[in-house]
Structure formats: structure tokens, C-alpha cells
Length: 211
Ligand code: B1M
Image (cartoon, rainbow, N blue to C red; front, side):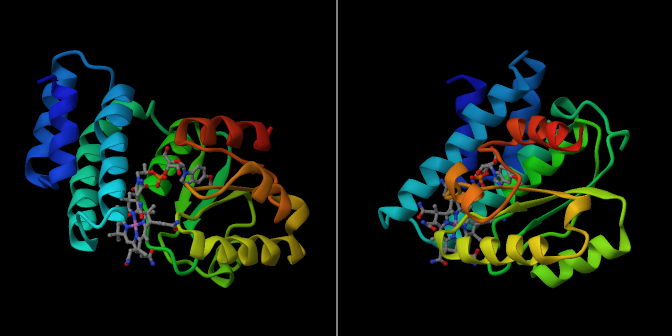
């Protein structure tokens, strides 16, 4: 079995203690860090999601898989991120109210940081008011980046973007959105400035929006 397949299997089975060393071995053997992330970890989470949808596993198994993935990402991070300078400005990132999914948001934060931004990560389940408060404390923020992973939290994403669109500082910021159920059309409909469907393109989008 290739090391990347081994990483995928360990993430799928939620073997948090074993994933980090397996990722390190894959790196040592010369596997591409992006391939380890995409083909080893993200694809494993898709399998986990499918199994959950089919009733083969339940929330606790999804949770242990998520923990395992986080351990793998910790080892991978220095190999993906090219070092942060903050030279491109500040970005606030959050998963919207009611939504606890943070793996995708964390990857987006990591890629944006590595593109040269300073990232203020407000975490998960973040109400619009907290984001606005954070902006007021950091009025030099250029971009607010919002993640939503559930169809049931798409309305919270909409409400958050609407609250930002109504804010007196709206002209000073760009709002970008993403997450599995979000589409370009939805992003446009709710009045966001940009949408991207993965972490690497989120970093390119942030650069474009900040230019
Ligand atoms: Co949840 N969950 N979950 N879950 N979970 C999904 C999302 C689901 C698709 C599984 C399924 O049914 N197949 C499903 C949603 C269905 C739907 O809405 N249509 C689901 C459900 C139903 C639920 C619960 C409701 C289950 C329950 O309690 N009955 C519950 C909700 C809790 C809540 O949030 N209130 C729940 C809970 C959980 C856990 C807590 C157990 C855990 C999350 C742990 C954590 O994040 N710390 C979990 C997990 C792990 C998943 C799956 C299996 C994996 C998510 C993940 O991390 N993917 C997921 C199935 C799946 O995604 N296939 C599932 C890997 C990650 C890298 O991808 O997050 O998509 P993703 O991020 C990508 C892109 O979307 C994009 O870039 C990222 C990297 O490429 N992106 C952005 C993300 N944010 C972006 C922002 C941007 C730009 C791009 O700009 C700002």
C-alpha cells in the first residue's frame, strides 16, 4: 500500500496517533504534500461523509476522523505553507453561526496565511455580531472570509453577509465565502464579493480581492 493510501485509511478509521507519523513518512519518501492532503486526507473525509450519509457510521466516527485529519494537517502544515509575513493585509475568517465544521475553514486560513496575509481566525459557530465587533477592533482588515458546511447553515451565511453589507464599513472590505454546499450563484445572490471551492483557490481569490 502506498503511504498516501495508508494516510487515507488511518484518517478514515480515525487513528489520530498514527496519522501524524504516517504523513511524516510519506513526506520523507518524497510524496507531494498537496497530494497527501488531497488524495490522502480530503478524499478520506469524503468517504467518511458518504458512509455517514448511508448510515454505515455515526457522528462519533465522523468526529474521530476529523481529529485524525487535524493531526495529519499539523504535520503537513510547514510543508504547505510558505511562511507568513502579513504583508498583504489582514483577513478575518470564521465558520458561520450554528456550524461546527472547521477543517475546511482551517485549510483556507492556512493557505491565505501562507499567501502573505495575517489571519484572525474567530473559530466556529460565529454570529455576525462577533465578526462586526472584530472588524471594529481591527479596522485595517481587508477581507472577511466565511465558511459554511451545512445546507442548514446557508441561511446563517446569507444573514452574516447581509449584516456585513448593511455595515457602514462595507466599502472598506471584501467578503468571500465558501464551503461544500455553497455555489458561485449563491455567493452572488447573497451579495458576497467572491466565492471559491477549495483552499488553494481561496488564497488566489483573497489576493485578487485585496489588490
Ligand atoms: Co458533518 N456533515 N455534521 N461533521 N461532516 C457533513 C458536512 C455532511 C456532508 C456529511 C454527509 O451527510 N454526507 C453533512 C451535511 C449535509 C448537508 O448539509 N447537506 C453533515 C452533517 C449532516 C452533520 C451533522 C448535522 C450531523 C448530525 O449531528 N446529525 C452535524 C452538524 C453539526 C454542526 O455543525 N452544527 C455534523 C457534525 C460533524 C462533526 C462535528 C462530527 C465533524 C466536524 C468536525 C470538525 O470540523 N472539527 C463532521 C465532519 C467531519 C463531516 C464530514 C465527514 C467532513 C467535513 C470535512 O472536514 N471535510 C462532512 C462530509 C464531507 O465533507 N464529505 C460532513 C474535509 C474538508 C477539507 O472539506 O470542509 O468541504 P470542506 O472544505 C473545503 C471546501 O469546502 C472549501 O475549501 C476546503 C478545502 O478544500 N471551503 C472553502 C470550505 N470553507 C471555505 C471558505 C472559503 C473558500 C473555500 O472562503 C471563505
